[in-house]
Amino acid sequence: MKKTTAIVLGLCTSLAAGVAVSQEAGSAAVEARHHQMEMIAYNTGILGGMAKGEMDYNAEMATSAATNLHAMAMLDRATLWVEGTEQGAVEGSRAKAEIWSDPETFDAKFKALQDASAAMMEVAGTDLDGLKGGMGAIGKACGDCHDTFRGPRN
Amino acid sequence: MKKTTAIVLGLCTSLAAGVAVSQEAGSAAVEARHHQMEMIAYNTGILGGMAKGEMDYNAEMATSAATNLHAMAMLDRATLWVEGTEQGAVEGSRAKAEIWSDPETFDAKFKALQDASAAMMEVAGTDLDGLKGGMGAIGKACGDCHDTFRGPRN
Image (cartoon, rainbow over all chains, first blue to last red; front, side):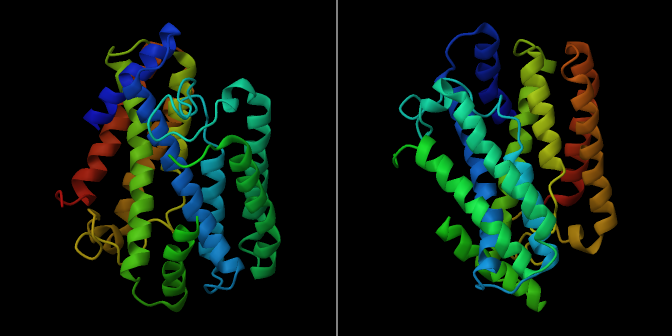
């Protein structure tokens, strides 16, 4: 906790001062985004595994995964997608600069995942067909955003 | 995504079948919990840094951090705190077995963070004094739960 606190100091100070984010603070934001993406992948993996028949359908688990997927998609982006943390500026980042130069399109791409996961929350626990029906929009949202706003592997 | 999907297969299959969770699936759940905890630490670090005066107060950032802290505390635990993933059973886990043998107390400890972060969402963006006033309950919730349910470093 102490280390994390230290790391984010520069982030907030920089933002408050309107200056470029420090390398250390930028790294903390990029790491936080990666935690967000890993959680999205974890929950999508549970739903996708059931949809593909690679695991048994379980209504409680499916609803839990859909609920958490939606929560991760709904996170406030001000402390995560911090300007100055694009690929090339901060090690480990694959975020394209267009995220910040074209925020309307980025918002729309994120909203597609928010909407798809909200819809999945409604159907995941009903039955396997419901879950399967909701899966396409989630996969499309992930792919569309990555195609547009994620750079090549570092 | 493919790797994650593969990893969680065993998790859901095991749960559906009511058998012990596999090592691989257990590791995926433990990793997901660690992402959750890291996100809690990231957002608490931003709030704590402002409360201690180690960084300038910024209402937008404070509200964003409080909002995301609450979202992380509210995640559904069915797919995260999976039985059979206590310390000793899965590498990297520091979760005490009491989490599963005494779920009522675990619920209550988690609810303390949910309540404290909900209260923080209301005050974080008002002013620095409001933020400071909400900080104690968050720190207490973290500490109480760790003291009770987190084992020693691995």
